[in-house]
Picture 1 (cartoon, rainbow, N blue to C red):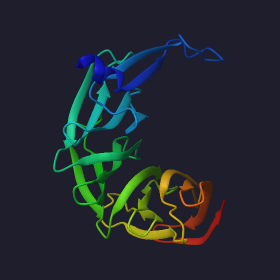
Picture 2 (picture 1 turned 120 degrees about the horizontal axis):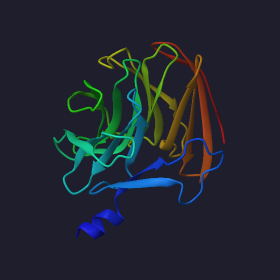
Picture 3 (picture 1 turned 30 degrees about the vertical axis):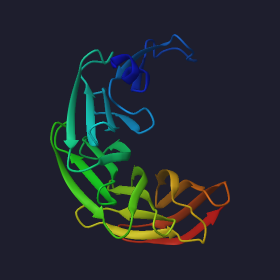
Picture 4 (picture 1 turned 90 degrees about the vertical axis):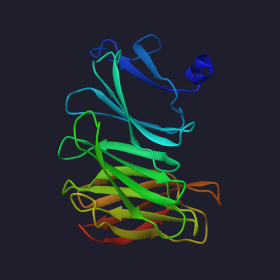
Length: 231
């Protein structure tokens, strides 16, 4: 059973020699996180220089955070951060301006967008929030930081097939929720969000047309103006 779970697990690869110009097979020390789903994991590098990974554990339906205790990741601290219902799928993790991890993810039980703000570097505890509970929302999340240092989250509205954006304040306690692509097609899938200066750009999948889309807007702390999309 452990072999089967290891084969399907999320793996972390550590570069053996970071001074090389090109990395190939054999240049990484690979550690697996047994029990993780390799399709639903995300990783960031913390202010301590060590990997911090989020993943969904399908067997338990939990959101798990793993912090490597050394560069080789031979020892880890794994913490179930959210265990209420079936939670943790479509997760995204980044390091915020506090130097701590933040995670966006889907609550499949309630069909909501959720958010976890770590309270320590290893994320052994976190503040949990439900950010959007209107319709079936919160799939395919992608996190980035605005130029003001506050979180931005792109995610899907599966009820309407739309792409949405959560524009957070410092703690994401009262986010502004904006639909940035409400075309007739199903467009809120496989999102990848980036922010540069005042602009937010989301690469996402138009499932109806089978095409890649780019949606861009200029945002401040509360709104997303001048939205434009190209296929």
